[in-house]
Image (cartoon, rainbow over the protein chains, first blue to last red):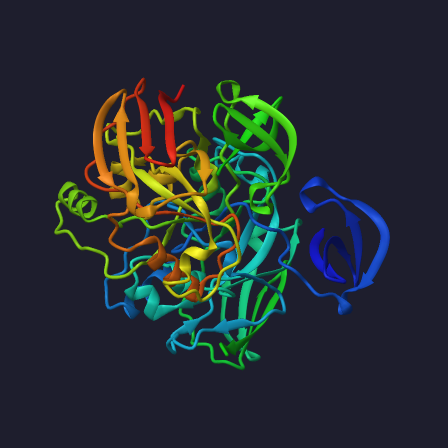
Length: 260
Length: 260
């Protein structure tokens, strides 16, 4: 099932996607929702981020080739993470499918996409074993962890490198029916394929992360975990369109514009 | 004016503190609120965290002696931050004045308080100059940035060292009438004074941080910024009571218990 949040005459509404229609519901996706009988053609829909996250977790380094590529760019030896230590991003940076990523005037050329699977938590979870861990997952969506590499190297934290306004496109919807092993991630920059990788080829699996996190932190409906990206990223220029497709989940598409 | 959020028969209610009473209001503190005429004696009140933060920002290293002490503990040369690069903490860890800080069974002896001034943002803010920066501040409260130093040294991120459930006491209320220059922070551990410092003796001021942040991120009502702490922290043991007083703001008080 695919849950979306859309803007209807400026008001956020939740709906379920069925073929080329969206069926509106009362209530939110985590509460189940009750169909109102109204439908809207998908082609006319203005997407919003599918939910307002409670806590925005991010794995950061979680694919081997990406760790190696980042180390090379920073002229350091690669160090694979030894355990699933989660990090954070910030809600101010979130934008929806179809909204523009704004490149700040003072950002460098190293302004790059990172294609990520986003795990959406659907219920209270504490002290889950790895076997139990996926039971708290509501579904999955797609994230673009846009990064300014010069700021990422030079600042003491990742705040503006990763969390400048509009640097976190997410969506277009949440898909609840996902087989992690079957997923493939593809990125196209202005139509040209730039990377393709098996989404589940992670250093630490979704279940491993959730289990480790839930030993110390309580997860709740509306928390989300961005699972990291693979390989080398190319620079994005104003005017580029960045498309991230995860097979079986959907395609997140955003235009890059220069800050005015 | 002092704004608090309290639990009344299990329901969160907002109120204004007047002497030894709390006057209940309808609406939240950022909307102004309308007095209902009901009052409750302060002595009978169960405090909640004064608001649910939208984004939980934290300065981390922002007092010179603390930087030097932390470097000494980590056997490194101290490096003072060169600019105000903000960091993040997570809402799952927040607890109210009067609630217990739970020390995990596998935490080391280096389980420490950090007394921090918390800046509460009251309105939309983007691209503020340093002169304008304080105009978006609603008020101030007190935070205890509880830290497990072994995890802080060894993990790749600060997630469990700083964000384990209950590691972020905050409160007891938000004070809107504050002269930053006049503030003094005092910490007492089970009644014994362990540190005292001028609260505003920061490397980067509140205004400097807000101005720098608002160049890249949009601040909104309900965002908050924890401003860092000074000096050396001592270890807290289960059974200890940690009290953080900031003159003119209030006193945040929490008992430490061992995880069962």
